[in-house]
Image (cartoon, rainbow, N blue to C red):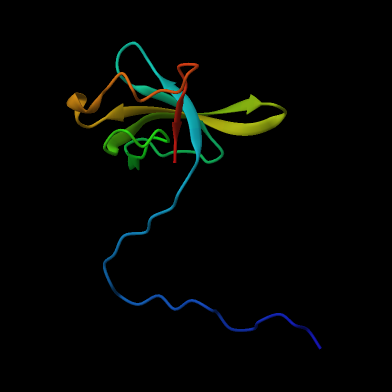
Length: 105
């Protein structure tokens, strides 16, 4: 006897809502104010995200994907995303780690 479930565990209902998916990324802020991050998942140009910095010292930053391209890093395919902040006033000097890299969730 198979132990696999034959019916779906999830039922989709006609309703509006928000799906929040957490991704860990590592990157840095560029000279023009964009963020360049590496993620395990690709981004879609124009897609909007909320970035929560790992330092936790700053408010979340609203960004949109400007560019997404695959790269090979440590022998695996990852994705380099260029993120542009929607509000340019949300920058601070304390949004980076000791080495100058950005860590976010």
